[in-house]
Image 1 (cartoon, rainbow, N blue to C red):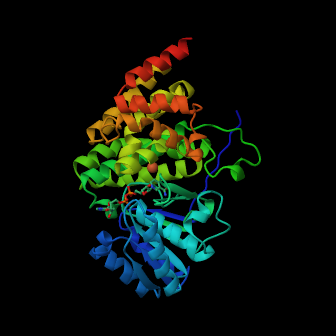
Image 2 (cartoon, rainbow, N blue to C red):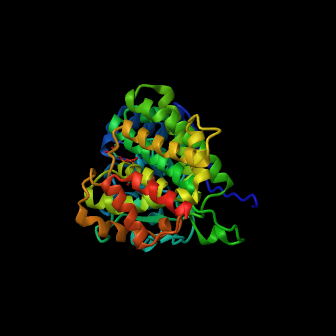
Image 3 (cartoon, rainbow, N blue to C red):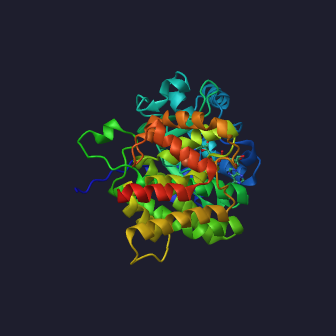
Length: 416
Ligand SMILES: NC(=O)c1ccc[n+]([C@@H]2O[C@H](COP(=O)([O-])OP(=O)(O)OC[C@H]3O[C@@H](n4cnc5c(N)ncnc54)[C@H](O)[C@@H]3O)[C@@H](O)[C@H]2O)c1
Ligand SMILES: [Fe+2]
C-alpha cells in the first residue's frame, strides 16, 4: 500500500487559552469592515464586547449580527447576509457554536458569489474563494472552524443539507478553550460526543485508491495518512477529557484537551469525511428535533458493530488511542472492547442508548432508512457498502438496542 495523505486546512490555526486576543491582529491584515456573526447568548457577554472593542482599536469597523439560531434555519442566514451587504463587509468573523460558524461561512459565500444558499448544496459547487473568514468556536465541538462544510436547515428539504467546498475553509481559526468554560454539561456532552464521532468515522471511513484526481473528485476523500494522524490525536484527547469536562466544567485541563481534540477531529473528518452515523442522524434529528451530537453518538456504537468486519484493525487502534489496555488480545477481542468502551463513555455522559429514546417511532424506521440513504456524500464513505436493506438492519438495531444481535451477525458472516 502506498503512503498517501491530504490535508486541507486554514491559513492560520491558533490554539490556546486567551488566544482570542490574537484576533484583531489577524483581522487588521485582511480588511477594514468585519461582519461579526454570533448569537444573542454570546453577544450579551462581556467577552464578546471585549472582542469587538479589540477589533475597533485595531482599526476594523464592526457590524454585529447576533440573530443566529441553533441548527441554522435558512431565514437567519438571509438576515445575516442583508446585514453584511448593507454594511459593505470585506471579511466575516464567526464566533459561537457550530451554528454561528456555519452561518458565517454561508454569509461569506453569498456576500462573495451572490445567489441563494440552495445554489451551492452538495460538493464543489462554490465557484471560487470567498471573503476572508475568521472563526472562533465556543463549543468543543463541531470542528467547523477547520472544515470545508456548512450545514443548514432548509424548510424545503426534509433533512439538513450541506454545502461542501474547500473554499469554505476559513482563513484563520482561533480556538480559545476559555470560551467553552460556560458550556453546561448537556452541551459539553453532545458537542464532545459529536467530536468523537467525527474522529471515529474519519478513522474508519473507506480508503480509496489514490488516483491523480481523487482530491478533485471528492471533498471528503476517505481515510488517508494525514487524516488518520489527526483522528488518533483527537480520540486520545477527547477520551481523556470528555467525562471530566462533563462532570466539572471548571476542570481547565479537561476543557483544553476536549477543545484540542475537537479541532483535531475537524482536521481529520474535514478531509476524510464521516459516514453512516452522520447519515442516520440527519433524518433522526429532523424527526425528533434532537441535537446533532446526541443523534450521531447514539448511532456510533451500532455503526461500529455493523462495520466491524470491514475495519476491525482500525477499531482496535481506536481502542488503543482511547487508552484501553487491550494489547496482546485478538483483533476481535480488541474490537469488542473498543465498541463497548465507546458505548460506556457515551452512557456515562447521558447520551441515550437507542433512537427510540430520542423519540423515533417504529413506524418511522422505513423513512429513517430511506432518507439516510439519500446522504450520498456520507453513504459513499462508509467502509461497509450500504444499500437500503442493510441500512434497514442498522436502524432497526439502533431502535431496538440490539447491538449484541449485530455483533452475532458480524461473527456469523466472518465465520462463513
Ligand atoms: N460545519 C461543520 O463542519 C459541522 C460539523 C458538525 C456539526 N455541524 C453543525 O453545527 C451545529 C451544532 O453546533 P454546536 O454543537 O456547536 O451547537 P450550536 O452552535 O447549535 O449551539 C447550541 C446552543 O449552545 C449555545 N452555546 C454555544 N456555545 C456556548 C457556550 N460556550 N456556553 C453556553 N452555551 C453555548 C448556543 O448559544 C446554542 O443555544 C449543527 O447545526 C450541526 O449540524 C457543523
Ligand atoms: Fe457531526
